[in-house]
Amino acid sequence: MRGINADFIVELNSGELHFVLEKARNAPDDYCIEIRENYINLYYRGGSALRITQKRDGYQFKFDEKYCLDSDTKAEFANMDPKSSKVWEMAFPKIVAEMDNWFKAHPKLEREYQQKILANNKTDFCIVDIEYAIHKKNLNGKNGCRLDMLALYQSPEGTKLILIEYKNGMGAMTGNASLAKHHADLLEITKNNIAYQQLKQSVLNIAQNKSDLGLLTYSPQEIMGTEILFLISGHNARSTILDSQLKMMDKSLPAKIYFLDPGEFSIDYTKAKQ
Image (cartoon, rainbow, N blue to C red; front, side, top):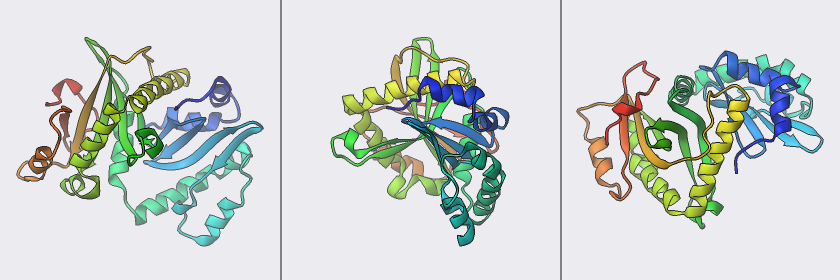
């Protein structure tokens, strides 16, 4: 179950972790805080810059050394004090520099666009989380999956949970992570009552935590329904890939689709097509 406690919130708002919250508040196109189970991820340009876990004796910091192109720099980060907020605050500009260099060598435009989409949708259609993993153990042994984005939509019928699969470019729609495969994964989640209820409660927890941190403007008390949205950028209307993917989907689980124009990151959910 996702969520962090009141002590964690206090440290982010006014304590030793405030430097992390400042990044997400002041530069949302580049940074965001995502709430996990007793820990948070600070994302930069779509990659996890810092993982901060609450422990009994304080907070533990972790940077993914895969973003270091040099082995000596990897060792430097691996040997840093994992419990010193000051050490990691001082090291943060170097973390950003290492990630910038890594992104130059390994561009991840879909992740960067995902970050900008999150930053530009915080009103009646509000994206509350990215990269939400559902583990195998929560799906009765079936393969786990990862949801690109989760949103809350204030509809006339009440707040709805929107499960979003995002694809940038036609080539991203096929293969092992095809639209049809993701649709099947989402069907398994909605059919599994335990996983589905955990997902809804986690989203409510996340929205409340983010509201307490000043990152969201509202936090609903209940979710009145769930919808699926395929969010597509870089779509070629002449291609038959989308049609072929749609034909493979189970029609018992309806979905909507929304095409983003180049440079567009704000979603008008009323224009999503069935």
